[in-house]
Image 1 (cartoon, rainbow, N blue to C red):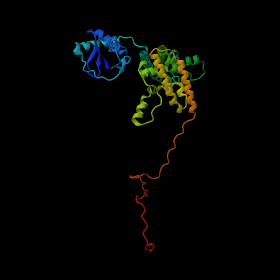
Image 2 (cartoon, one colour):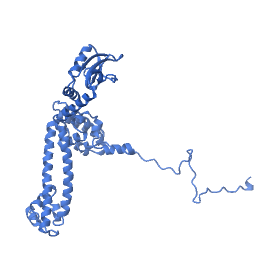
Image 3 (tube, one colour):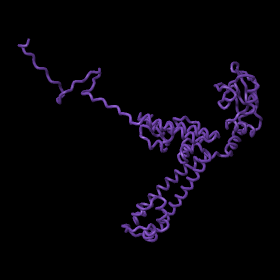
Length: 382
């Protein structure tokens, strides 16, 4: 049987038993042309030279790369004897071709899910910064008007402080009748606090814009995944996986545990109980269920999420509604089968004493440390 082998400098049809080259298609001696061929291979496409050699074999062939599985069965084959110097390709030519390949791949259009990964990480940075600024604002402005935290939160709190500053104006804006126990601020101090509140208010606006941007990308790039998980959770799943393409290639057990890597490593290192779910726990069907049903529901949801990711990655039709109905039926079945919590195993009763080296029970010693002496033998008893 012949084996189809593709190198960076050509495509070869090799006899599997003898190792003799039965046919070949050599790459052109042009670095840019070679780079374009290699880029096409990295995208997962078949080269015309590969199809031509496979057709000329006239029968079943094996291939040396999973990318070529359309032409034959992939198998391991040692093709190290096919070297570029035999066909007039030098190391300098290979270096120039690889440099051209790098320039070609970096200038390609970036998929939208790659932008989604960066947008999610930007959102996390914004949330972290907002929490830090909000804590500082509450602590600082709380010296002047501590009661405001009971009437306004988050963006509303920062907006009121940035616009009005003084507590009298804020009380009038809120329409409440309270007297504050806070101290008065100098105009310069109040101006500094208002600058901080204005910065925080603009951060809240940026966060809202980022969330809208993420929602738009998710609904456009992966509608099935968005229908299963919702926009924010779908975006976080893609970010944790490193992209939609990689998410679609993961097994469902890995999808189920995305975001729980620390707990998984802790289980492997110390033998503690393994996690049952990762960030998928944020789905309402999971975190609103009893604890003994969450693992099974998370497993069912991970399977449907993986199907949705594959459909979105490879341009299939919308099937989010069908996947949702199937998942809801599976959740209903789990709740029907496992309505009650499992009974915890009873602990074994503690044994008195400890086993000795040979498995026998050790004799308990007296506080003095020695066993009681046997009574003396009486002569009358002999």
